[in-house]
Length: 177
Length: 149
Image (cartoon, rainbow over all chains, first blue to last red; front, side, top):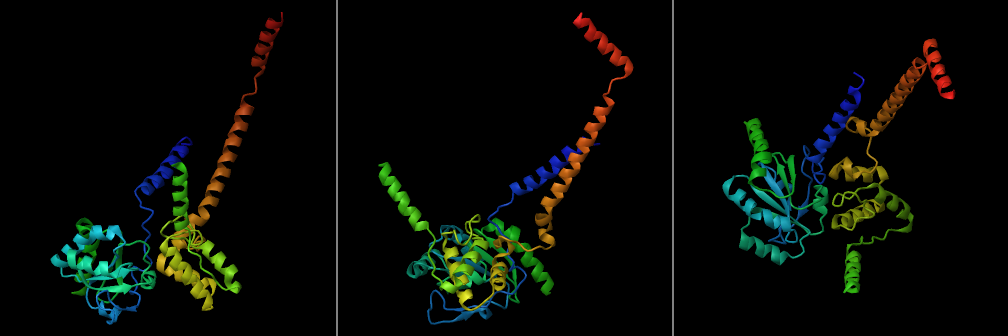
């Protein structure tokens, strides 16, 4: 019996280490999940005179995608976002995070397709701070009442969409019925 | 060639260095201590004081702004943990989720002490039981005597 104790300790510690092995330390769960989306007021990428606020997003289940042209991973996920915008009825909004070259950003969307209803111009990154953004790209799932339901840090693709986003969206839609 | 390399490396490190934010002297001390208590989420093993990432620059400006608005340290920590979670605090709050973190080391220490006591006890027991019987003593003496002869 006594000789089992070291073995038991070994398995407990190995268990913790084994689970830790498959956890990505760069993924920090957001305290904003379950809370209302922070309020903001800004212009958009294509129209410096227009003002958009969180009220323009609230109303139906939507995605908010943090992107910029200086962010290579954002360019990598771009075709998948365009496909989502075409193949689903979920509106996608952009948060153009500390854009260094707006002209390039606009021509990028013209050439590669624009999945966004509009892109919020977050020039100084203040809106992103309120959203707890720490690594672009990030994608928020926001419900019809404006509550953040999920946050993805890193690129979006079909597999992630099917695995992480769709089940929550289906649950939200069932609850709304 | 190596000199050029070092020069380039030096320039590069210079670029990565944290952007300096100047705060009024009356806030300087609090500003410094706050930055050392907050983690930069981009380079996770650095504090906001050390990190050269763009986000750390922005967050240093936020800390400065909040100090100038007269917010307390508590309010500034709350501002950060509301957005980035308790993980940004180098001094995490004691709550059920962090109990293991706070009390785990003491539990391990206690377990270690109990373990040591057990080992010492069982050693004492074997030491006592290894005392020789009279018959054995006679045997040993006989062997020693044999060798001496």
